[in-house]
Amino acid sequence: MSAQTSVGAGSSGAARRTPFGAARRTAFGTPPVPAAGVPLDDVDRAILRALEADGRMSNKDLADRVGVAASTCHARVAALRARGVLRGFHADVSPEALGRGLQAIIAVRLQAAARARLGAFARGLAERPEVRDVYLLGGAEDVLVHVAVQDSPALRAFVVEHLSTRHEVAHTQTSLVFEHLHAPTVTR
Image (cartoon, rainbow, N blue to C red; front, side, top):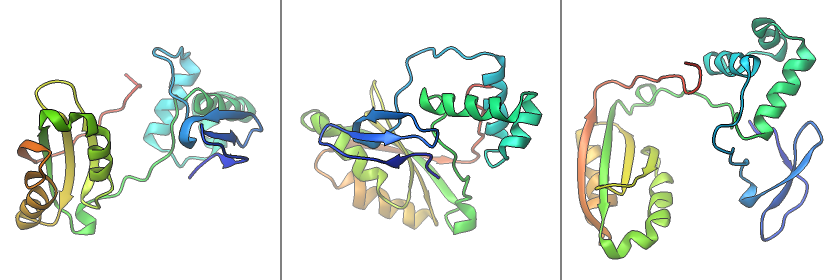
């Protein structure tokens, strides 16, 4: 669900208009990247905690939970989005319910000559239906890939077809995920 609609485009980015009427410019239509350490007060943190627990709650319910007027809550959520703190609202889809009960984290090291194409490599992986997340790293490995597949043969096929047989890949190491615990990001 996007809270932005395009009002124009250009080669350097797209002008975007928020539902609250403020136009802004973003590169490639992406949300703004927040500055490190965006200041948040207690109300902002309470809003973020509540939305992390239930991103579908209505503005009225959110305002009641946080203890502010609905109009204040609406303005605060809009400001959190505009500052890039609140990036969106997402469904938490169960891979098991979709027949993809085996999850793995695959560490990938690229050939030194291929590291200049790291971004394109990672974006290509992110487009695969088995891939849930891709992380670009600094350190011994270049990429971590979180996949959800049907079973061990499907995992092996993914690693062979999309990783280990590619000329730019120097090494892979696959670890099975036994359990995934989600921790809140900013509410501690």
